[in-house]
Image (tube, rainbow, N blue to C red; front, side, top):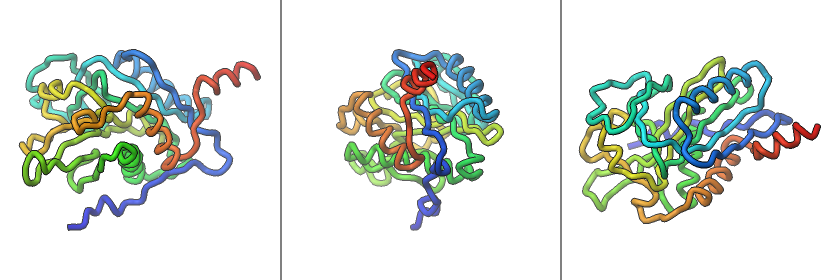
Length: 245
């Protein structure tokens, strides 16, 4: 069966001459409310033409977030705080060992095509996983990136990365979460992304036998982003250059 979503166009480079996307990595665990407040302020500044686009990589303390389509019935056991996120999608988990990428891009310049943006986010993840010998795939009826698990049984597959976005004034907010080495038992407190079919679970690079540090992951993540979306520049270097000028 042909997966129609595999036929979607991917790649959303900025127009020629546009400045590179700033690339920022935060150390430690970033509180979720602080992340959302920063993201909303930055996206508004991008929309006003006062700040460059940004990809911000963080880890969060253990928590659950509810998208705009979430049902509180999907919280099976509130082991951790639950936050309303404002992004699309349903319930998901964030925690240590999971790389969250907040993506603030201006689709007015790159093309006002949300479906292509989502497909491009998936392509970014799929290319990154391929660098670690993991085959990530799209699914027709399930957003995110999935890995087949024939070792678990016929038709079994696990989700390794979730997507959830919001678009405001054609600037994107929120983004992606890739399971590098989180505690997968923490997903048991929710119905992840509303998918309750027994043969669909969650996995991580570590669970698949790929022991990868976050810095190693981030290096491949950045390279794959540049292939799909275009050039990046270290945020700290950009800030220093701005101060010097």
